Image (cartoon, rainbow, N blue to C red; front, side, top):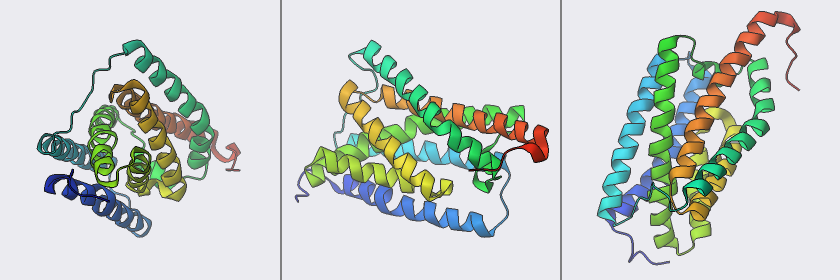
Length: 232
């Protein structure tokens, strides 16, 4: 293992995204289990600020480490087609899990459901910010720095995906596994299309669809009341 291709900024980025942020996420997940849920608006605003900081740090390290950030693909039709196909596939696979989570009144899900027009607008902004910032960070800068450090793009993708999954520990361990698997698929999109556009589109679309689906399912549960089926 050689460090000659990774500078101090890249090493700091690796430590931040593979160690510190996952630990903070685990701490936040534990805190949520023992403390009252904060207001959704406060959570959304906090996440929005975090995404701005993540994007700023990523662009700084990309510049310092000479890492190109390719957003515009050479093959637009392929990128858009794969984005649509993967998004539809994720929604179809995840919808039963969404329904079960709402049925059991999962506190982590209730925290994310926007219930006012202001919260819905804020969530769309959060989704766009997360889609751009996290894809640039994890599928862009972190993947390249890990590959340069480890020497294997596959292992680098696996490490980056696991770090991304644990960073979503607020969704529970099942969520961590799912997010890690999805992250690996997004790395594959980058490898196939040669740009970050496809994973950004999938990320943004999925986040928006998932939370609005949670909101719709939650309204149905409230309307149906005791007849709503319990989770399997």
